[in-house]
Amino acid sequence: MKPEQFDLAIIGAGPAGMAAALEARRQRLRTVVLDEQFQPGGQIWRNVEAVTTRRPQDLFLLGPDYADGYPIAQRFRTCGADFRPGARVWQIEIMPTARQAAAGASMAMPSSDALDTGPDDDPQVHVERRRTGADRHLCYTDARGAHRIATRHVLIATGAFERPMPVPGWTLPGVLTCGAAQVMLKTAGMVPRTPLVLAGAGPLVLLVAAQLLRAGVKPAAVIETVPAANYLRALARIGPALLAPGYISKGLSMIGALRRAGVPRFIGALDLRLEGAGRVESVLFRDRGTEHRLRAETVLLHQGVVPNASLWQSLGVDQTWDAVQCCFRPGADAWGNSSVAGLLVAGDSAGIGGAEAALCAGELAALSIAWQQRRIGTEERDRRAKTVRRALRAHWSARPFLDRLYRPPQAMRVPPGDDTIVCRCEEVRAGELRELAARAVPGPNQMKAFSRCGMGPCQGRLCGLTVTELIAQTQRRDPGEVGYYRVRPPIVPVTVGEMAALQSGDER
Amino acid sequence: MFRSLRDEILLTVTLTVDGEPCTVPVDVSVAVALLQRGSIARTTARSGSARAPYCMMGVCFECLVEIDGVSNRQACMVMAEDGMAVRSQHGLPAGLLPAPAELP
Image (tube, rainbow over all chains, first blue to last red; front, side, top):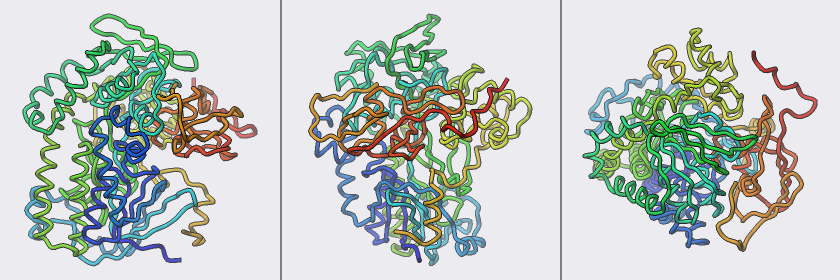
């Protein structure tokens, strides 16, 4: 049976995916959007339609940035894109016909400046404007089973997830991420039981604390693990951030809310660890030389977000290490075109920029795809892109400040204690990994083979970056050169039965 | 670990977790039921330590449970339904290989 055909398949219905779909439909591309959640919005606007229509009183708790998602989700619903919720993409296949067509194209990365002025004049550009067949196949699973669809272009807009925070005791029940608490608030109208402690670094720590305060939940403490040196490095970059729309004022107002509510806030905490028998009971840390121990029923951890890279990594897209954001980014041009022909990456999955920047990036990617498929001319594409890029630059201007302020210190990225669990799934500890790294294990894949680190059900999502940096630190190498796990499909679990049904043509 | 902001919720579903009934709002994941009860999802196959939902967005795989007889389902990615039978998972299923010995 021939799979369904599309011009564009977008994976992820968050800000980047929805913005791309809106633009793609404006250009009449046959567009399908797959998201593993059941409503559009991504994590930032998770469940925004239901909250707005069914429990609007909670919009006050979540704040105006959350409410902003509703009109975008509404426009997305009616834009004519084929939205498939509850769909988990586990493999993208590039069919042999596509590989042959791409073989002649140069894989050299054009500079983004060159692309700004128009790729048509740039001989180095690897994005060709030609008739492509629907020779990229997506395999996904939903409640009814596995399906395969075919598409000319693929846009990966899978967003971000929270950076691993390997501190002693982070596997204890009752310890969740700040993002998890937000999901509880957004989807279920539920709040953590007290005593509650938030710990880590990043805008989300402050945002969740402020949201919970508005919900009547007062945290026992907010423990920030931002080193003093970060403030100095960030201050040097504060100029452009002050001009960026709202970022700094929002942060200050959240800090103000915590102060007015009398929530103790510790800045520059060290040696964070969690203890308890079978579940978390206390939070321990050192603040300016004094040891603290706080009782806690629930602990929320967070130290920034990192790209959800599994899909583009599984396709072997070129990647580079971002030393400020401490994560891998896909090599991509200013439109999001990756080193794999016909594959684009937009939004936080391509490097953390936040929701507003992701909206811009999604639109740019769709403009490039519409241009490549000859739906719009070069002039129209560049004229439209100019306005979008101006907005994108404004949102990016806050990043140098935020990234430096909230860059987790090395001790929070690579646990100094040998007993700290790095791989939650296989319970592999930092000491064992360091010992292997000292014995010149060449990289994360060999480390996995020796230790089972990264071999559990999460497929390395919660230990991958830690392992890369641990090897880099022990062997005094650059994390970019150490590299990451080889990510292979299926990138989410799929049963043998589902795969077999797909092969026999028993499809949607 | 979590409680509802409101006393009265109009639309609910009732499932069982380890045989005990648990009522949650409609359109929430099974993991919400676990967090509302304060119960764990599973114990690990390696050390037997307890794990509960951690990320709530399908990334960490800590909330693996058995749902209606199918094991290793991510509780945070499955919507709760009336009559659903959820069971916590404990180590390796009986009859399979024992957990690997602790490394020295």
